[in-house]
Amino acid sequence: MSRRYFGTDGVRGCVGDAPITPDFCLRLGYAAGKTLVAREHLRPGERPAVIIGKDTRISGYMLESALEAGFSAAGVDVFLAGPLPTPAIAYLTRALRLQAGVVISASHNPFEDNGIKFFSAAGTKLPDSVELEIEARLDEPMGCEHSAGLGKAQRIDDARGRYVEFCKNTFPNELDLRGLKIALDCAHGAAYMVAPKVFHELGAELVLVGVEPNGLNINDKVGATSPQSIRDAVLKSGADLGIALDGDGDRIIMVDGKGGIYDGDKLLYVIAKAAVVQGNANGVVGTLMSNLGFEHAVARLGLPFARAKVGDRYVLEMMHANGWKLGGENSGHIICLDRHSTGDGIIAGLQVLAALCQQNSTLDEMCADLVFYPQKLVNVPIKPGFAWSDNDSIKAAVDAATQELADTGRVLLRPSGTEPLLRVMVEGSDGEQVERLAHGLAEVVKAAAN
Image (tube, rainbow, N blue to C red; front, side, top):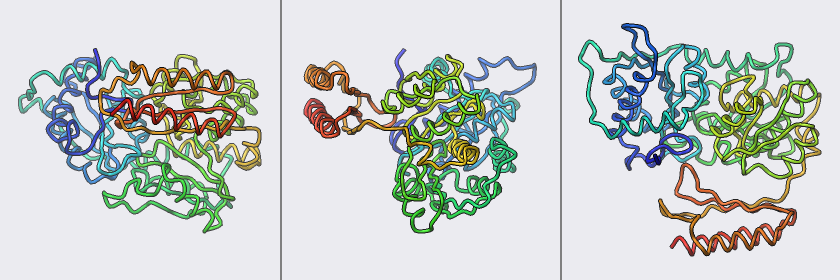
């Protein structure tokens, strides 16, 4: 069965356009609720319950109300957490022993977009099979439980405080951040109230950026997808480090005191390197987008490395399959399974800071032996449903580029899971060759797509 609504990270799109409309979210809440009721082994008289969190987009109010109504109609109780990072909802789902967690967010996308993603009772992304069950129920007529069977809704007043303490407890008890000046960019997003508390209560002096959301400015020239913002803040304030989160708080990039930018590959390497010293590492999962230099550096640490499909859910699946604790994407999704069940920007940042403190080192020093291959990524707009993988001209161009690179690089084409784009990536030892091949392939795709 093919997917119609769920992508690599839930259901996502432009608000007001199908499927991100209030009527669809009402039906989605009902379908998800009925799926939970059918799958859960509940005691007689017990109702399933879910928690709903969101980021700071203005559309979150509307979608939250629609989902709440759908769940209630299905006989599912709802706990409302308000604006909180995506990984906070994963944690609270586990901590409160709920049947599922729901996050209303479009992550790093602009405010015009929004989306809905689900967590299982274990605090992990729903498997494909469950998402397909929910999609199948969307085709069925929507009903409503009798009044006595309707779900109830209530707000959780201490949700933020619970999550702040959870994050702080992932940082070693014998360490603190006193003496560190950290610039912190929350992207006007879901972490704007909790991330400053975490780092401040651990002792850091903070310079805050992106902590004034108005419903329309999430990810707008701030956050992990706009690293120049945090870089400027570090250099202007003389901070020792900069940390930038994205709109829903599950990805991170960092900046050192000299303005050097550190993506997910580099930060994951710092965590892995420190874990090897402590005897607490058994392997690393990256993705098809992870730099070849990262793969080679991990091998030099003596750790096995595997590539998953792009998407933190696939990284997590491979980590579980291999029994490994560390994984992530160069975009900044970093998963530390000994700390949390999902990727978490705040917790990843704390693990990097712990590594620097324990090794008495800097980001620059920790990454000195990590040499990246030149890599070029070009996003090409395509129409939904465009069969790019069957196109003869695209296949011929990819074959030619691959032959030219030989053993010195690689070519990767993949569709975005959240936007109508085909991502064209070329990586190799020669930067000029990489640029030429990437742009050449992008032009072939553009011509074929029109």
